[in-house]
Image 1 (cartoon, one colour):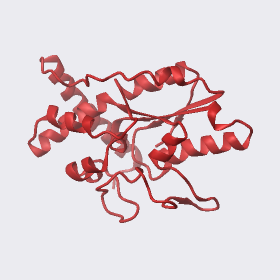
Image 2 (cartoon, rainbow, N blue to C red):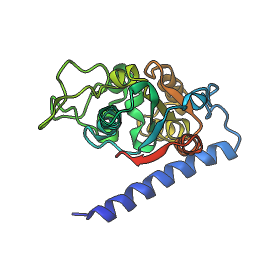
Image 3 (tube, rainbow, N blue to C red):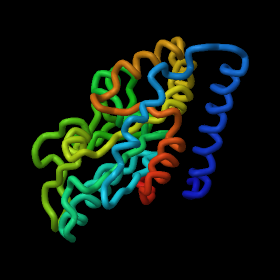
Image 4 (tube, rainbow, N blue to C red):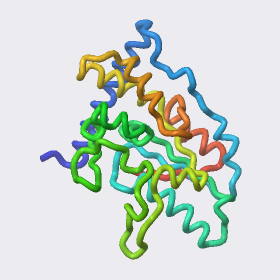
Length: 222
């Protein structure tokens, strides 16, 4: 069995291989990789809160990509800063991008299987976005109880959600090779099926940098 370091290196090599392939397509003149709507950067100017943090989601990791932003909000409120003076930004990049997509895409492209994300209710590869519009009390933390960590619930608390355009390009074209489809069409489908309110950004790194330039602290959330 591979140790954790070997697994990380393997994941990085796999990503870099897909990245190089996507960049090769661009260099050889294949158009349509970049989203016409990127960058959606109006969210940057709204980061004016007293306390700000950007959460870097590169991998699926249980509830943590969405639990940490809620903890940030709750504990700041408990120590005297109201929610309207807080800014949390979640950046979905690398293998975290499926969380930006609607249930229909999870079922159509078997995103749970492709990205290693299980449905916590079934224990099987997810065919839905587990964090979109969860039922009341669906997520619970020992000693705390039910927590509102659905993406829609976080958005209701003014949490900003960003998704990496570069990762969508690399992964859509990579998936296209496996299922013998057109990468540009898959990416177009993914963009059309993003959750309401999600901001497409040129890259996750770009968004993290911009958020930090606005004074946001950094949290690796996966």
